[in-house]
Amino acid sequence: MKKGLLFILLAAASVCLPAQEKEKVAKSYRVETNLFGANWFISGGVGAQMYFGDNDSKAGFGKRLAPALDIAVGKWFTPGLGLRVAYNGLQAKGASPEAGDLYVKGGTYSNGYYKQKWNVANFHGDVMLNLSNMFCGYNEERVYSFIPYVGVGLVHSWTKPTENNLGLNAGLINRFRLSPAWDLNVELRGLLMKNSFGGAGKEGMAGLTVGVTYKFKKRGWDAVPTVPMVPESQLNDMRDRVNALKGENESLKRDLVEARNKKPEVIVKKEVVSAIPRLVVVFNIGKSNIAKREYMNIETMAKAIKENSGKVYTVTGYADKGTGSAEYNMKLSKKRAEAVRDLMVNEFGVPASQLKVDYKGGVSNMFYDSAKLSRVAIVEE
Image (cartoon, rainbow, N blue to C red; front, side, top):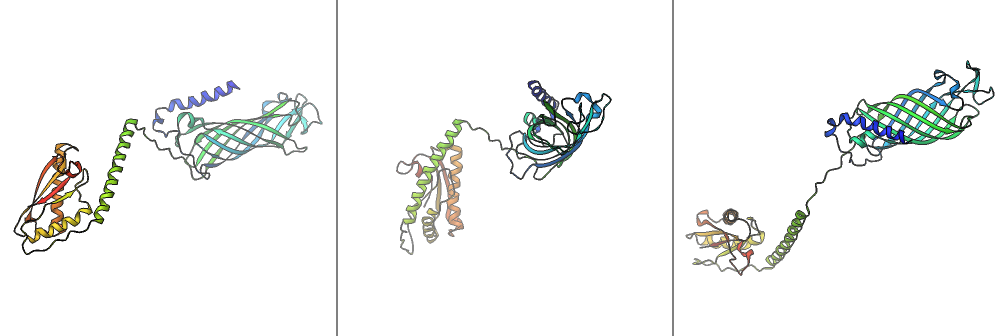
């Protein structure tokens, strides 16, 4: 038994080795388990089988050959593991020293032994292992696959007196791919029984059939996505960043609530406004887009500037010196100043001639010792 298993493993390896280079691009064996309705098949084949019993050596090799028929239905659950239910049988031939033994049909061989012939059926379930996929990796375009199987079943004689017995099945399916839907099979099989058809000891059947397999849709397998490993240090950095963003998000929520609850300032319109208080527009870290909460004050400033049509106002941008490089902060402060200028002109109708842009880059804390209040644009005369 151990020698037989070793032979199967060596044969499977020999199939893979010549094709190693070609199959570097083959899909990994790690594939997703399919749905119950996928990868079903039906197969059939014809060939010859031979009975082995107490007196099998008393008849010549050619005289003991009988026709064989195989039919099977099964499913592959993974590229390497499948189950099937199968029928093997048709006819068996043997030899007996007694004219009254089971299935003696008359006539003798040249040595005087009586000819036996009966109809037989072997119904069994098998576990199949596609060693080509298991050892070489799944490749749906592989031409040849090496598939051993084992199973158990019921052996029945259709010829009276009928006999029933349990049987152990083992075999090898040599599968050759013809197309996505069709395969050619060359199957070698063996059956082991005990006292089934009149013998006094172990009995068996061996067969060789050639046939085809049709694979129902859905066919094939989907590869499991490969998830790259992330270093622990990088994960810790990501966690710290997420926590920081959560804190900033909470701060923005509070600012939004305060802005919604803030009462609008009442500005008394005068014929001539001699001086307008400066406007401070606060930005989020690393951003140059203006939050909606700032629109109310910007609109108020825009109205006052338009009323002072003879004056020019400066929009100056700033950035937090503690965040980003000097070059980046200089560009960011310019974008912030331009964003306020563009909003006043395009949204609130301030003449472009009344506004000019300046920018200072990264600066230290400008107001109340808070880095957050250095991320601003200031509009003043």
